[in-house]
Amino acid sequence: MEPLQRPATTELPEKMLSGDAWADVVYRGEDPSRARANVVRFAPGARTTWHSHGLGQRAARTPRPAGSADRAVLRQ
Image (tube, rainbow, N blue to C red; front, side, top):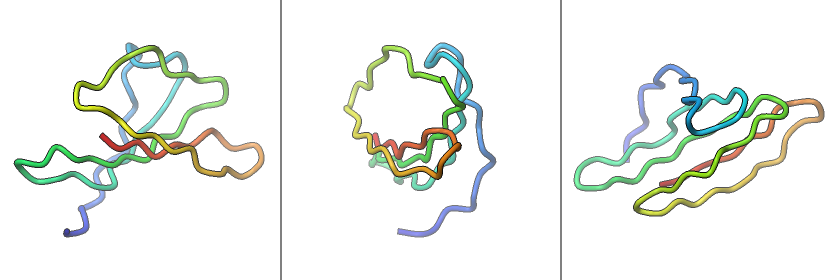
């Protein structure tokens, strides 16, 4: 495993959520792997909409400082 050059933070598309959210790529597997790890930050009140991940997904909510947006680490 090699560290990634940190790509720019991306804003997530409206079709996947209600409100604003941003993602940072932490890990991206090389072919044939499709593994990926992202840190996702949600604006206060933002929620994901119902959607599916064809190969599955694992999500973990991490602690947050008081007053900050929700944070989750998502792995596909």
